[in-house]
Image (cartoon, rainbow, N blue to C red; front, side):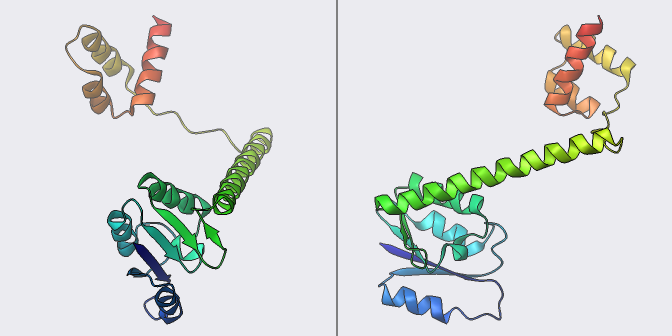
Length: 188
């Protein structure tokens, strides 16, 4: 089955151009969102993702109608792929049922990964510069009452309390809890 997805950013915008394309392509079912593409929490997008099944093809006028960010686009495509559903974007001439279409998506994935790594590298460089200038000291450590921790630690080691219960009583996440346990055991 051909399933179309149409999106405009606001209630005032017109979907006619995209709907005509869906009609011309003999799309059997169309989902229409009038919402920002800033994320994937859109009612009709989610309904469409639940509806499609193996053998279906999702068609959009442009991949920007499906997702604004490359990461969201790739996540949606991966969801479709997992369900055995193909994807076609008319404007960009992407069709995941063809080798060329799959290549285009691979290129998008590579560009996303590159962009992400460059962003993280810039972030690390910025933090290093800020540290050198004395303007960045990292996150402040979470304060934990040492006596309370020691008492609960003894109960935990004796099997009188679970790690999860101890985390809740101390207001700690699991990684912070286990880091504190290692620090405590290192001191002992």
